[in-house]
Image 1 (tube, rainbow, N blue to C red):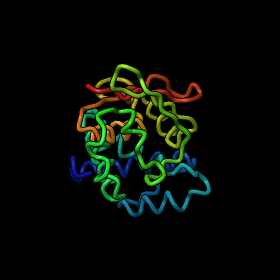
Image 2: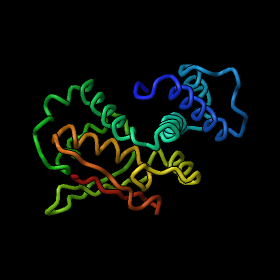
Image 3: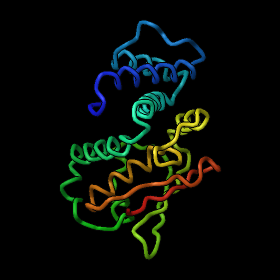
Length: 197
């Protein structure tokens, strides 16, 4: 949230609250304006909408897209993954151990970053890229909302939280630059590529 300042925070909270209220089939409460209040509202309603994490991610992403067309999304994902790896203690032992995206992503401490999804990775021979197949993604509600609204990445294509995180990790570990593309969305799995640029 440091990237855009207070306007970003206000928009993110507004969009997160609206998303959550829509899922709950009610109007957004008017007295909620702080991050802690939005988080408490989402937590209090997990029995009615168990994917409350989608509300927060939706709010953050939609605010960013509104402010800058999504240009900062990659930097934010990169910084978030870097922070997760630093606090988990895995960063020091991983940086520079490989220049290959597949090997870097396979090293990810998925359990430590609490990504509850089934996924697998496929090495692309002869290229520094990896295919990621995601089943039962915990962010699908958010993705469908963005698709319905026509919100896409600045460079085109759909946003994908898990591909963005994998992309950031590959960059941190290898020291190289990568990007991602989501090639199939909910058919019934999602399938994307992370590739060196």
